[in-house]
Image (cartoon, rainbow, N blue to C red; front, side, top):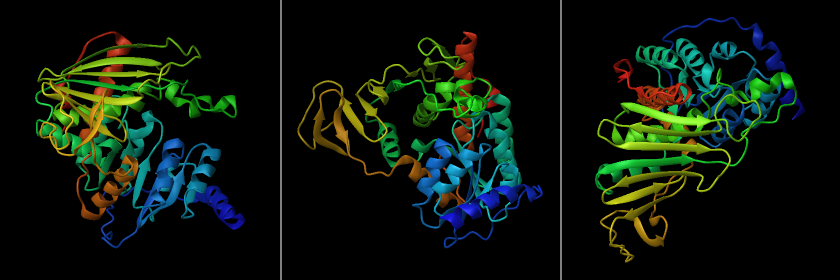
Length: 397
């Protein structure tokens, strides 16, 4: 352990020696089915560190480099990897590392677009955490860069990779709830959402989610997953967004709202509601897809079907819904049994397969950009107290 820590500290200290040289189009053409994919993790906080832990369990994928602007966070991130990565305080130096095939961008929201564009210019495949980018310009610039690249780009909406969610989307598209008329989505928590700050000078670097300059708050960090899901199910983007929010409970100097309530209207008339609270955790994370023949309810791990009209609790006779069991929940309906991995692990496995097979991921630049636009529309609606309409300039893909 002493030798390992010495190597890591030495790597951090010497990382700045490397010169910056971005070579656009430096595609890793030598990657094949038997290759090891070397990952650089940019941002080693909670999410970047968590993904590092998952990568440890994936065959032929290694974290060979990690980067964070906070030295103590970088040290923690390096310690989580089982592959003895090199550490950097400047992500541009990590991008100069020719051993890095692909990067994970898990930095504050406002930095995603710039870092991802630089990574593509450096010839790296990109897994960019949600929400894809902040602001319409940042989103559009990243889309344009990716469209002119032959590299793999995956957006980190991990539920888009979940085999549970994929199965539910298939059921919905087969008409199992009939005509979809509404979505009711929530992600409620009880807590101030703050991280411990060792020194006041690190407040904004650690609690960046509280400040509008860096963050989209609850809408970007939580609701974005469910917005992506609704876009996916409907294969549409909303034509109108309205919403309200406020700093009504945690009076602690934050700038982003501690509660948000949004309504997205889609061209087919479907209304999708999104709520996120930080003062009450009842039912936590939940999506309700409401149709004229029934409702499907999904949380992070399970799903249920609740038929309209007379309930039939006899196994095998559940309005023709495949996967339904005799397990009846009076509030949620019949359980839908679908085997699936942790969504974040499945997303990383999908990223690996996309690189090896040169295949566009399901959660790609287009789906990610559309969800990001929807997030920005929601923020504009709440902050400006206006109804925000979809702009034709955002018709990606």
